[in-house]
Length: 316
Image 1 (cartoon, rainbow, N blue to C red):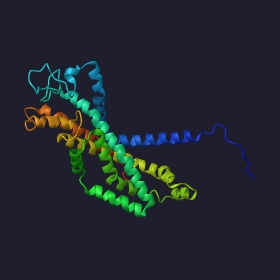
Image 2: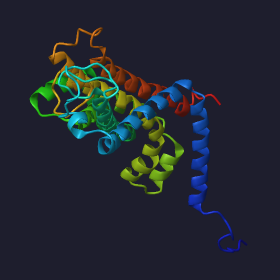
Image 3: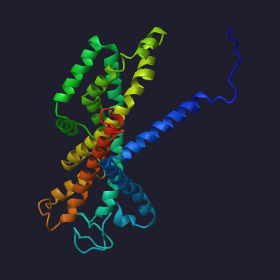
Image 4: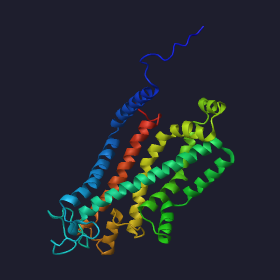
């Protein structure tokens, strides 16, 4: 005969157990991440540009004169010729319109981060739901979603963005949504569906279905959480794609944005200085190098995270 004695005194609550397991897993994954040198390098570069983005509004409100250092309407009155080479007042010089390049670089870093992160979140949300839904239902729904993904993959994304930008007014928000939709219904959805196929055949999925769990409940509670590590990995790669796409469209003058790294290069090209790299290097290198470094940093971070979340690559 079993006697119910009630709750065990001083027994740890369920949320404390889960919190402890999550903390232990996070600590283990962080130690694995620290072993990847490319990941640390990427993280350092990202933190550097984050500091630039955060420092710009502080400098504008405390040190810099808005009439001179505003990234869009500022003008370097203290320089006799434009574009002016680097000096103490303007460490990276000024552009052909007399605007401080360092201020433009720091201001644009904030918009690049917001664009990349928003595009990544939209991509992961759509791709995760597409992959989980296609794997769980199979059949006709799987076929329709995968054929849509095939169409998205076959069409060159940058060409679609160029056409849409020429037809409608596209800013950072619209661009992030477009990139998220194209990526989420495209390659990201296919990859996450392949991972979801290994989840939907697990015994606990059948147990949840037998115990009366609804379709939406099973997908959101049991399937999607198991896709999140891989989804987070693809967030890093989407940020790289978003920053590169924005730079290309801004260089072509197709985006409705106040300032960006691609627009800085577009201004240089419009003024006829693009091919005079040796003489006017400060007009080209700061923006182009920032695009390259930030895109590379998220890619390196994604590669290192792949070694953390992928059991086949994990080094324990």
